[in-house]
Each structure stands twice: as structure tokens, then as C-alpha cells.
Image 1: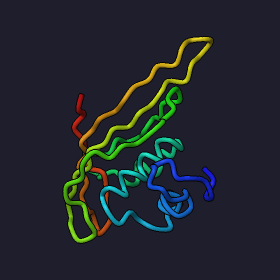
Image 2 (image 1 turned 135 degrees about the horizontal axis):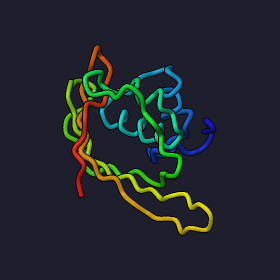
Image 3 (image 1 turned 135 degrees about the vertical axis):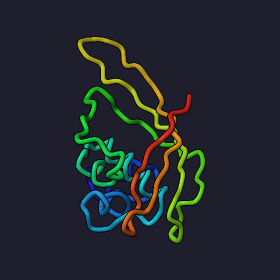
Length: 135
């Protein structure tokens, strides 16, 4: 991703002013929602290392295999509960739209991931705990 381009998390900022510094390890997410947005951008970029780093050790998988056949299209934040600068727990409900990348003339299929995610602060930094998939 290019620092001067619009950030894929749709915050309205450029990637270099938004998720880029978090992905590079130069700063951490100040809120649960900002962590959610940075994780979405990391999925889009295929940055498994960042996703694992921002996942709570109790629920983090040993490895994360990224799906090559998906193209993430849009993130919609539906609700946030807690997760501010001064809190230690938060919930972010979101919808992420995607399409499959067609192979050999197959049509692209569109889909949506709807999740209510839990975040906690661990050693002063927000991490993803787990999520409940919604239909």
C-alpha cells in the first residue's frame, strides 16, 4: 500500500497517516475501533504478521493462512461499545464486503463477513480477543 493513497479502512485518512504506522510498528491503535480498522487493512494487504501480533495470545492461532482468492472491498463499522482511550475492553461490530477473484473464466462471487468482535487491552495495547459471527 502507498502512504499517500486513501486508507482501505475508509477512515478518510491516507494510509500513511492511518493504518500504515501501525502496520510498520511505529505506533499502536489508540482505540478498539482503530485496531479493528487496522486489522481490516492488514487482511487486505495480506499482512499475517500484524494480524497475529494484534491477536490475544490466549486465542491466537499458531499460524494464519491468508486466502489468496478474496478481494476485500469495504468495511462498515456498525456499532462500538467501550474501547476508548481510557477503557480496557471494547466491542466493535462490523461488516466487511468481499468478492472472490475469478479463476479460469469463473464469475466472481460477492460475500460479507458480519462479526461482533471483542477487544481488550493487554499490557497497554489493544488486541483482538475473539468474535461472534453474525448472519
